[in-house]
Length: 350
Image 1: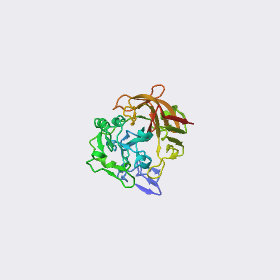
Image 2: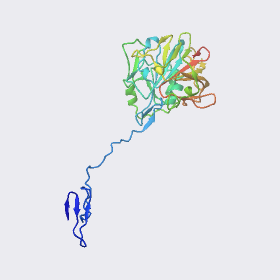
Image 3: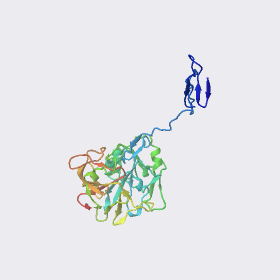
């Protein structure tokens, strides 16, 4: 066979010559050679996909977190709200805060940390008769600085690990020099929690929506820009909706309530409960936590009327709308205002 200028001339067959014109890149139709397999030009493809870490909800915030990162107990501490105690230490990092009436018409807090535990918290103050009912549903650690014998008996039988400044053997409580006694007891919070990894994480206390827009107050509530409360003639806190920051900003007695960094305290959800006061203990009022009553739930600049109910010391507070449907909060932190029915008041302003 001869190939000249892309013309292939096959050998003579049956007395004549057959000429075939084919593209230069094709093999001759007359060739008997076997086809050549293509040679691989790459060594293969390897995926860089990584399986995402599993997600779960923070039990006291309803926010998404990496599974297993919050497998530790909560810390519920009695926190001072006297003028001399402000600004408090670590209050801006709480998951949930309860404000309650105490003697003299002032208020104190039961503050709860679990998803974001600071190195230190304070000032820590003494236990009051309603605190076991507030702390028990969380389990975990209950911290305080002592108290009357009757109240200590109540908290010692509650399902919490008791951490008391007056009986401290851990060295985690101390007094700081920047505040005056008795408003200067602080606790090394993160270390306290880390020492009790054997205690379980708290149960979820409330229902949560996946977003602010899907929360019950946003779906069924009405626009409310300010929440004004009065616990007594000397204590009247308030919350105002900050659309730019998408949170409620806290004030006390008409002045911004600031944290240790000089920023105004804020909350995603504000729950206002109307509660009865038990005067069994004389000058020390006891907020009645076992029972039910009226409430309001504020999220995203809107407020929904609700009913609260708590069946026993160890049960969490339930919130339901007018149809008996469980109310869902927005993911984030929550402040709960326990406003007395008789001497207190709540004003909601559009």
